Amino acid sequence: MNNRRALITGITGQDGAYLAKLLLDEGYEVYGAYRRSSTGNLGRLQELGVADAIHLEPFELLEFSNILRSIERIHPDEIYNLAAQSFVGTSFELPIFTSDVNALGVARILEAIRVVAQGDIRFYQASTSEMFGKAAERPQRETTPFHPRSPYGVSKVYSYWLTVNYREAFGIHGSNGILFNHESPYRGLEFVTRKITYTLAEIRHGMKDLLELGNIDAKRDWGYAGDYVRGMWLMLQQDTPDDYILASGETHSVREFLELAAEAAEFHLSWEQTDGKWVGTDRRSGKTIVRTSANLMRPAEVDELLGDASKAATKLGWKPDVTLPQLVAMMVESDLRRVREEGR
Ligand code: GDD
Figure (cartoon, rainbow, N blue to C red):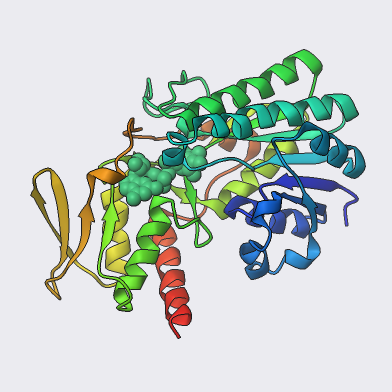
């Protein structure tokens, strides 16, 4: 034990699980904040072997008084705010809820920190490359202007600036991690990488016929979530709070990710385009296994993201270890095993 206490919101998600493991390994006492509605969703924490070591804390980002009471009682040294309505596509359907959780939720936490102990609680805000949106330059740096393309991105711009403002106005040790997409076998099934690896595994095991996708020409800078949570922790170990990009420095299209995943699952795709839609056929079996659908396109899209993480490299000594082909192999292998076991 290092006598330090950390509170992680969004403990049931991919990043919450990896960060909890890292902080426990570093000797922290870890409090995991979860929405009452996400109880029973402890699978990731169980698989990583940390569920029993965490103090679970019911927590609701829409309700100020319960945030205040939790922070008063736990009095953590560090708070990592990973909780969010994090589905970009869904934010077009739920813009007000998304803003309440992602923007005002952060105002509630920062106000609680200000009331309880503004000087001695360090705060990490999960900011995102979605803030760059229709990006003004390539690669994106900490100084690149924001142009969000979804209610999700807009809500995250608010929480980014509020964290900066509370730092400047009240001296709160608040840092923004501007994280580019980060994936793993624990990524939610709604996000494109995991949707691809899981559905290909289902097709491989004969449990599904078709993978339907939206815009496969969108490009993202994908890294491994296990590498990125280390960067979050490093940000809060600095004497001076600041904002940092974490990214791989490479960009690839959804189509490229899909092709790598298909090869790893032993499919070999040929593409054809009809009426603006793409159809991918497995050359060996002759079966169509991928199709694009207009229903899965977003009303406004972020065409390409590419991050420059050199500030994090210089100041934090952070560098990602896992490459994209390693990440894809890890995810496909895990899903082939998972689907095989679930199918028994
Ligand atoms: N989800 C999804 N489902 N996306 C698809 C699909 C599909 O069937 N088909 C194509 N895409 C495209 C999306 O249009 C987008 O351009 C890209 O795949 C990636 O989508 P997601 O995996 O849903 O992630 P995201 O980039 O929108 O957002 C993720 O990364 C952000 C960091 O940049 C989320 O984790 C955000 O919460 C995070 O902030």
